[in-house]
Length: 232
Length: 232
Image (spheres, rainbow over the protein chains, first blue to last red):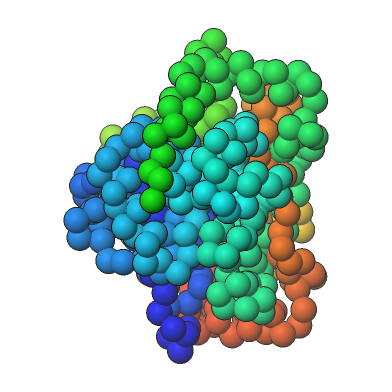
C-alpha cells in the first residue's frame, strides 16, 4: 500500500521484555501500510526476551530515526529499563516529537517514570494497575485507553486490541477491519480466566504468589521510580 | 516451576514468517513451566520476518535437540520453506519423535507438504483452508483442532488460543488458566471482522485482492507441493 503516507513505529527493546507485548502490536502495526518498524536498544546486540529467545535491535539510542509512534512494551525487565538513564533519555526525546506516545502492558510504568503520563488517562497490566496513580496518571480499567496522543493498552495480549484501535485512528476503520481479517482475529479463549474479575480465586492467588517470587522487589522499586519522576 | 517435567518446544524459523504465528504461541508455551523454546533454522544468522525485524535462531537443522513439541508457523514464506529440502528433512525427522506435531496459520500447509497431515483433522488460515484436502487432511473449520498428536491452529492470532489449549492438554486446565490470567487474555477486538463469515464483503474483497497481489503464484505452488507430497 505505497499510496499511504509513510509511518515509522519505534519500540523500545530491553532485556527481559515480555516479547508478546512488543511482537503483538508490531504485527498489527506492520500492516498499517507503508510502515517501518524499529526496535531500539542500547546497542545492536541481540536482546534476550522473557520467552528464551532474543530479538535483534534495528537501531540504537544514538542512531534511531525519530518515530511517528513510540511504543513501550512491558515485562519484568521494565523496572531495570526505567532505572536506565540512557533508555529514559531516548524515550523522553523520542516522545517529545512523536505523534503518538504509547505503551502496552507494564510499559505504561516506564512512560510514567519518564513523567509522560502525568494528567493522562491510562491503563496497564491488571496486576500493576495500582501504581498508575503514583505517576500522576488517571487510572482507567479499560483494555485500550486513548487520551490526546497517549494510548495505553492493558496486559500482554491487549497489545493486539491496542494495535487495531490505533490502526483505526490512523488509517480508518476500514483499514483496521482489513488487518483484523488478515490476522484472523476472531478470538476464542478456551477458558474465561483472562482478567482478575473473571479468574477464580485460586488462579488469582497462584498468580500473585508466582509474581511475588519472580520479582519480590518490584513494588518497592516502582514506588521509588514514581518518587523521582521528572517534574518538567 | 522447576517441579514440572521439562518440556522442549521447537519452532521452525524461515524467512518471511508471519512473526506473530510464532511469537504468540511461543509466549504462551514459554509459560508451560520448565519449558525451553528453540527457534530452528538453516543457520544461526538472523531471519527476516514479515514485520520488518529479524528473529535470531537458537539452533540449526544440524544441531537442534529433539523437541517434545514441534510447531510450524505460517506466512508468505511458508511456500519457499516447503520447497526447501533441508527444512523439510528436519521437520520430518523432528516430527517422527515429537510428542506433539503442531502448526499455526499456514504452517499447516508445510506439515501437509511433509506428508504429516494425511488422514488427520486439521485447520489453517481461512484464506488457505481450501488447500488442506489436497494434502490428505480432513479440513475442519475450528480455531484449534486436535487429532491424536496433531494440533493445528487457524490464522495468526489463533496461535494464542492454540497455545492455551495445548497448555491445558499438557499441564492441565488450572495451569492454562494461570497462564491466561498472566497474559491478561480477555480479548476485546474493536471490530467484528476477524473471519470471512463476519467480515463485510468489501473487506473480504480487499483482502483477496491484496493477497493475490502479494503472492500471485501461491495457489499454483501449493497445489504442486500437494502433488509431490511424500507417500510414506
